[in-house]
Length: 272
Image 1 (tube, helix red, strand yellow):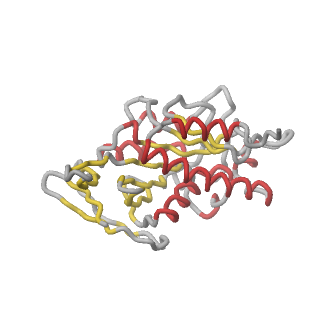
Image 2: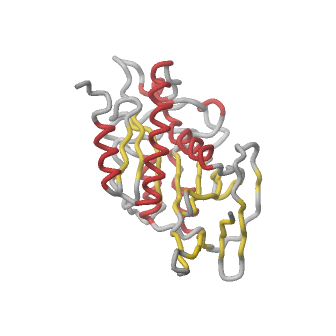
């Protein structure tokens, strides 16, 4: 099946692949707006056009952060990539991206390669370039206010309590990492995304619970720590459940299934 990225005088087709992603392909892209779409005839022969989705996982690049709590957004994108056979092999707008589909609906997967607090530098340009509407931009990130492995799918919201860590912005800076306290600079990562979407918060988000640091454990150390064996089992199950929820969202929008999903997640660890 072919998925087309089209513009006034440009048409680029991508064939769907079941391969896993390996390597990164860098391409020069023209600074023009193009449209990502799929058009198919329905049962009556009428042409149906599907609005694309942009899925963005928040995380930090590099092996140092791979598998840590703060990079769970990247893991969700990887899981969707593997489930749907979408090759993540192109760098565009400071993000690793892949184009494919869920069902017949075209989707664009993105993992921003700037540090988390600068994710908007990828989200805004990609949404504009592929003409993705706000209601179809799904941002995926870790959430300490949810128990480990608990998911929440929302149609919109604020910047909440999600804080990206403060990372160095130039090689000359020290590699020290600090965390802003809650109450000051809350939600810097989401604020940055909103800032590159004309200040709007009207975009969906998938929150993946990682729980709070135990006792007096330092927040930075907690966020950059890998999951324990038991926590990893809960996270793997959550990623599988999240993939199913995302598929339903793309194919059916926010509906009763989404409501039931959120309710089930809220009480998933409650024993009756």
